[in-house]
Image (cartoon, rainbow, N blue to C red):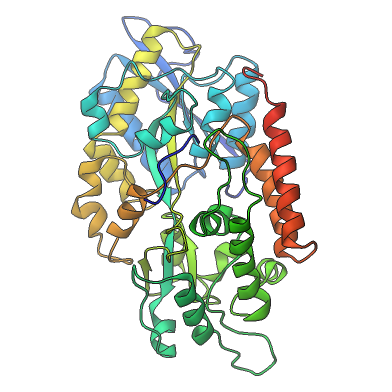
Length: 436
């Protein structure tokens, strides 16, 4: 790591599925010594994640006959719309799944229980990501427990690299190497002046796979150690200038408009339109669906390192849950963090396992399908900083994203874009009052 760890979504769906695996009307403690809890998570109805989660709930209930679980699930966008309404009305689940980037939104509004009293040194030693979650709280408290981890690496299409005579990337690659390789990989096969294959996908609405790690690699920051916005810097400008060069000068990457016109940043690599991209672990699924032979490598080195950042999705316990429900919720969290459940979840391919034993096992490292070297993700996670989390993460990153995108679209000069990003993002942070 070049810096110490500092303080720090998906398609919408209409259908909301609710499955009662225990007794109905289970807001209170169940009869006959049983405890009923509500469990909330996001997943597309009928998708592998949903089916696996439901199977795990059945296994949990079988192992804990005194606990009944009521599932409340929905697709990502609907889930969070519903959750915010439930929290406001005092009807939130007893335990729910948090996108790691949004955890502090609920913690900062006093909706989540501090889990520090539950976590032993042994649990911490067996689990990846706890330190990154603590880094998001000014006082180092733990308002969520890791469920799955995401961090970006460099994805590459082996067939396209071989056809262009480009050696597969290594951990020694710099941004100069990335640009040189992307130049060789960019092909205009029909001579119409527009590439049919681009060497590298530079811009993405998913900024954790685009400008954020680039800014960090060039020595910039999003927030400083005191939680103030620090994105307006010469280092950030250098990173965005590299992106502009790749898109508009070297033309080895689709620009902002072309990226969206071609179907969006997440479709370009699986369809073979781009030969390389930054991608989080979950992009293995879309790359596999594209039926391409692909590999992964560490992010290239910038002037200040690789800029690795990680997002730790996590379970949280409702601060209003009574002691019995909270204890039952913690049992669910520990069940999900166990080797059996983590192995089952790993097989879906949505996230890196947070159980260190499973992360070191063949179930994760040798799944028998691309990419072969998945340890690269673990190495990146070990070097990662968190996402500069706070209770208004969505608001302040939206302000930065809007301004940065205007610079990357060449609507305004990059220095002006960064100045606007810093001002408006800081205003979003300053408006927040604890508990609001």
